[in-house]
Length: 328
Image (cartoon, rainbow, N blue to C red; front, side, top):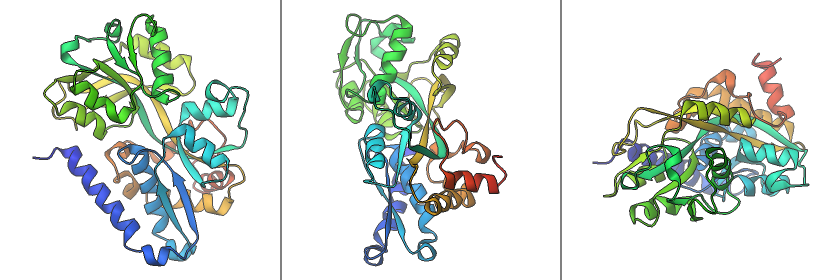
């Protein structure tokens, strides 16, 4: 029998497929607004599809439609949006922070024209580990085979921060791997690694896949003192918990404490104000329907959508939130 998450993912995919394939002939001649998101099995892609679905409810009135496209994630999305290749993107808050301050991946290249549209769901720092590796707490990673994601990814950046605070030197204390995250669950089940870092919204298909093999797995919890210290050290981090209810075969259950990074729908400062206003209005006017598009959206709160978005709100977004009385 399929798990709850599998049914949700399949039904969501089929719904989005219908949305974007049925009107293709008429859409081909209409102006198109674009969102760049992430891999097709990730929550970014679902989020982009959900925004597009809300926008396209008034496609005829707007005289154009919105399309969601896959990408390699935050860094690519920021570069593509700023270059004018697409209109909107989704990024983790940390990369927007780096870009707007010209640090880390954007060292010396401050991007001052990034603008926020909507704060979305929180992505949780998740360490998935094999039970036979005996990684019961985060410090037990020392001496293990650990995947930290591809070079330059959010997973690699976040893992470096975590390992430093744990007192673990990744060069001498770990056997490191840089497999893409979509390969990590397979590598874990194949006994090629003992654990992997993944910063992601839950539920997630890759995490579910990691639990489906013969090798038993769990999510490594963090000590609350560690979480509080880590969250206080970075403006884009906050204390959060991982909801495990969708992972039937995960060895540990209940809310698992961790830190989270908000995902943010963004654009560039020069993006047309009316288009941004329409995007925000359509999501907010159909908020309950939007929340139903993926389980990761279930905890979204209407009043918090413009909060903690790292970069300034676009004028079109600010206009809507002021009209709605959500901001001053």
